[in-house]
Length: 306
Picture 1: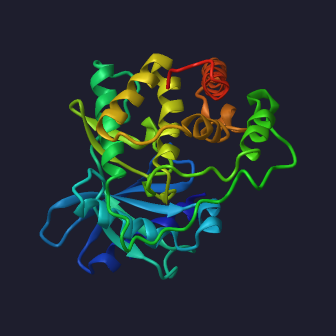
Picture 2: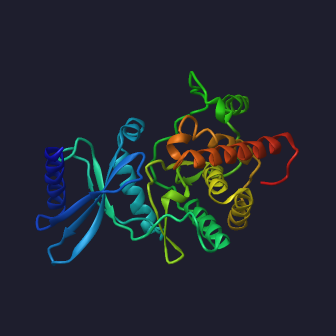
């Protein structure tokens, strides 16, 4: 284990010197919480003597299999988002060579902020989240090259997670897939949830982890954050978030129940891993049941609430 740690430190030193030969690595430490990438914090002394914290992201096998160019795509996307004025980490360096690490990697700004799951003012929190999501969906997609989203509906797994009604959800979606699109295609974050939103002093400091970005119907992002907000703050907060978003970006929501069901497939066979403990898992299962119940009710015409 010591040798592995020593070898990694040597690689970190190589990387920061590749960024600038006069950079000095002061320390490196692993950041917990990443599911799809290895995330390491680096503290670097720069040529002017000042120190700066940075984030090294090395994408996981799943992301690389889906998109071998994920590091370069995320780096370029962050550049675009920064130029559009969105609060995202500044991309410092892209190493596509694979000479230091086995796979390409990117170095980003270290954001001094934390995820927020118990805000003092939930309404203001929801309003900021809706506003930020709307701004993502307004970023120009001109000359923005991103891989298509894998079609998880036409690739039905051999086994479905019946504890989350996955079979019923897939039956419903397969009957109408592909959905007719009533909205203009926009940039989508692809994994827009409170864990990827960093806050400082009551304001959104940055949105992170853009490796799942794609171009498609804005309802896809909206559905994901709806489920996550239901889990975090309850179903009424989910409805309020939707109202805030629609007041800023009045899109066609005819197909929102279908996209809700699409988002409800995400935790299949993963809920135990996502939850902090068994109590949290049980609460998330109940929230998931509420979420799909309101979607099916809307599709049957027995509910008007979105």
